[in-house]
Image (cartoon, rainbow, N blue to C red; front, top):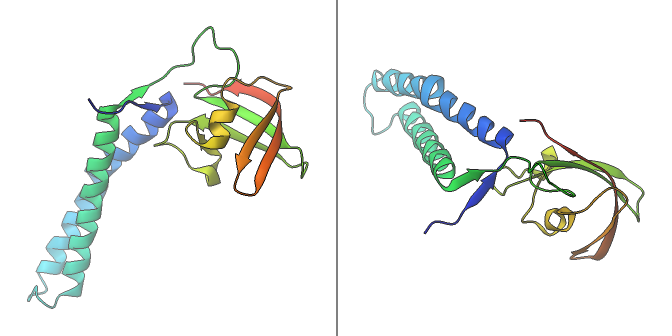
Length: 159
């Protein structure tokens, strides 16, 4: 049996929108680029053709990846009896050492993008935040040692 992957409703919507774009306008653009490059003659030494075929391969690979994610994932809505942070929670926290405040959304592994504030619940920090409430102090083991974070706010994404 395939492993069960979790998505937030927002994450599923984003993947569906990307898939629609890839299968529609982007696929048409790549097809047009291949057609144009073919019209230039000898395909063996046609850099534009090889580039267009490479782009087609990347596009089809991403389409297959998204379709796979959607097939094996499960969308998790916020439970009505939720206590503490969970998948889809927006967590504002303060690093107790530096005093810096940050906000992150807890997501499944396919949605994770730390630079965009999307933290996987499977990561050490994300899993430490699951179940936490405002005012909790969370300790997370990182390569440099233990970091302490004060949970300042827990809210929930809509969708």
